[in-house]
Amino acid sequence: ADCAKINSDGNLIVYLNGRTVGIYDIEQERTISTYTSDEDVLFVKWIDEETVVFVTESYVYHWDVEEREPHRMFKRHESLDCTRIIDYRMADQVHALIGESKNPQSAGRIQQYDQSCRLSYLMEGDVGCFAKFKMESNPHPSTLFVSARRNAEGGKV
Image 1 (tube, rainbow, N blue to C red):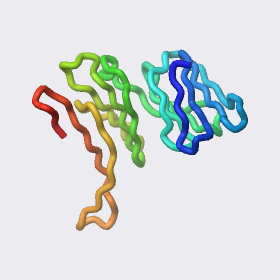
Image 2 (image 1 turned 90 degrees about the vertical axis):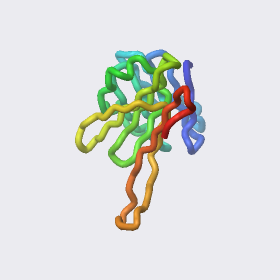
Image 3 (image 1 turned 45 degrees about the horizontal axis):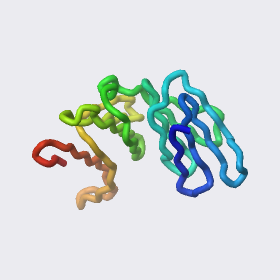
Image 4 (image 1 turned 30 degrees about the vertical axis):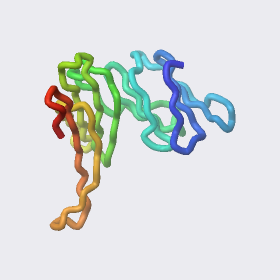
């Protein structure tokens, strides 16, 4: 396998072998599902105990272990072609795909995708995460996206 990651419950492993993504059940000692993509799979990660995200050259997919096929979530923006995908984050209906620049002199790229509006937003950044923040004037917590960039002077949040 090119890559293997265990879920937070410790009972399932997602593995990547070329264009094939598979889910292996440790307790049953067998592969419970496989999916072969038409494109190279560049990144794979558990986003919860039962859902895997994987990124191909063109799309981002979510795959629930209970389902036969993954769901195409959104198209990957072309500006991430010159990056290596290093992370994926999600909060509510907003997704963030993070790519590290292959050129150390250039900033990475972050694609945010709002599922409810079906819109992508691009920004420069090398890392990012979602956080909940409670403001005094709002009875409900707000979801923030915090990103940072590396540069010759050290960095910028």
